[in-house]
Image (cartoon, rainbow, N blue to C red; front, side):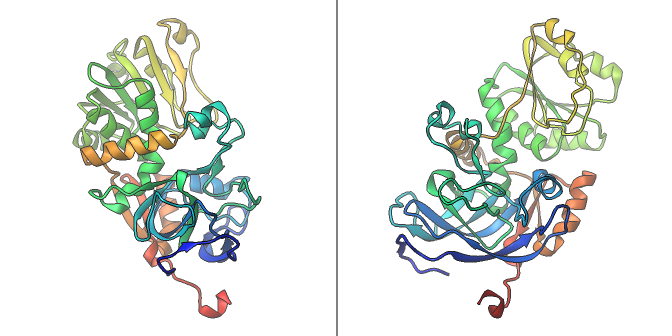
Length: 364
């Protein structure tokens, strides 16, 4: 571990180790690699927990830059700071999410809506560093180096492992709920009770809305009520779905697989909004239903830096965190299989203390 002193410029690259897919579709294997040296406004973070997101699996199977170290939901401890850092001290708990830089100059960036950066934001892994052109490596590793503008203090009253998914699943649902003014007097529908959906239910309830959860899984209906939904409806029941017409101010659809949107569009009031976060490859809906009620069909990205901090503050105040299951680094492939089966309630988090360091000879 590094000492309690700030890091000056022109330091050598940092040797790190983690789990990587060496080529497309590969299983994850131990891998040693270099991280950048700390810049004046950077911190180094010893990663304690890293969430497992479905996008990690997509990246491993997709057209990523390999070798690929996934992971963008990190909680850890500051172990070193750059010379200009005042936001953090050595030993602080810290949270890092799925974006670690942006152009800082375009209108969205100036409004702290960095996910909509017109030059595209720098992602936590498989991104291109804006300063040196290196490929970013993610949080399935022993440490991370990040600019302090994209790091957040860990809420002291929340379990660290359950905070990790807040900077992905949490803020991705928080952002549209805030943007479309979900709160008292609003009737809000949540489609799907997975990693995103379970956070959406918690947020919408805490914001004061009347919350209705739709699921194709009968066994998840009781879970939804326990998480805070006022009602839980089986979406495969055509009669029940027909009874939802013209009822909702806002519906947040968290399902990533192709599914019919018409029942949800019919459920919107005049000027109601259906926001689809899952973004299936093909959308199945009748455009005329938008006309019949001046309804809106839209989407939303992740949250910016201001939104993320507001979300963490709200979670701390209302004691909200993700429902997680902690797994070891050795269980990651089994975790991916469970993720595909939908057999997770509701987010997996890796205990990074179980990540074995390579032998000293391998780091030489």
